[in-house]
Image (cartoon, rainbow, N blue to C red):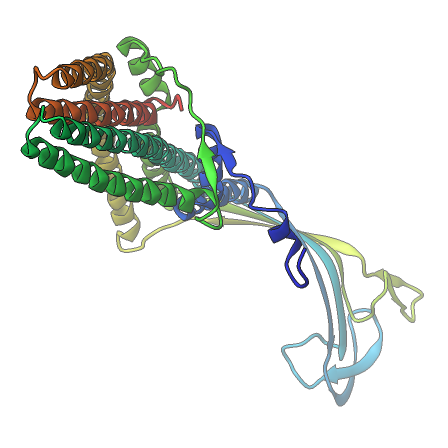
Length: 436
């Protein structure tokens, strides 16, 4: 190792990280900002549920206070039979010193508390649905990028093979020209095809590097981190439409979000109507509020002693009478928003039916075309092989060979695009059914 050279550099380049589709989705969930925001909103909504439920329970607190007021010099007998100066501030107690140490329990009974809990529950359900929407959308995007990057790598290999074949064909035409079995125009045509395939190879390399970089942005802190993708060679099956439809009815997050939104609107109506009903407040206080910080007060001349430690309780009933119809208008506003939420729910149900049928038809069509694309590649490869043999035997024109080469490359690229199309269609379908 050279002096001053890092040990990591001496160890050689790092091995590429092997990434499966599940790994890619998990890594993207840990770094994608929109998904992180949705997860934070869901966690916050869950805490709002706890806060709303805590509002139904009695509230306990401790109050401790010591008050001193300057005496005014006039002495008087206090309530405990003790002569002491009066304070200068008439709003304070009858003695200069006052000590408060109390435990206080408050409870308010009304319909607003249960309405707030219902709304918090619905809001938490809506936040969970939105989080699931973000997760499935992210998974679909990662799936498309994952298989798109794989297809781009395959297209690079296809372009390299096509360029190699074109170079070999150029050499073949040059050899035949030397043997006076082909015209110089064949050599020029072959050379043009070779140049075209070289440009296609460069474009494929650029597209592959771009696809890997776009996926690396979601997977790694450094998008230039080397990695390799590992995917199953088998084509994922497509479930029957009845099973897909049943799964979408159970697990569709858009539908759950619309239902939760309607639940929030119902809770808002209940909360608005709660303002029309009376509320009951209960307060229980236990402790000391005396001129001395002691359980017992001073002895009186009669030999009696007051006990400072005690309790008080109050019951308050608040009955609304008249507020210039503002509460009625709030109830009407909440009912209007509830009716709009019902319209959104029915529209979401209709859109789900249409989106489900469209996504299933797309996935079914893409799956059915895979076999045809495989057959086209096999036929194009055989056609190219036979055409080159015919050309070598002087029975085919150079244009036939060039056309067969282009057809074979086009068929292979179309097969890669077809695989990406099916995986993307399957991912879109799975976002509706929740089976990702």
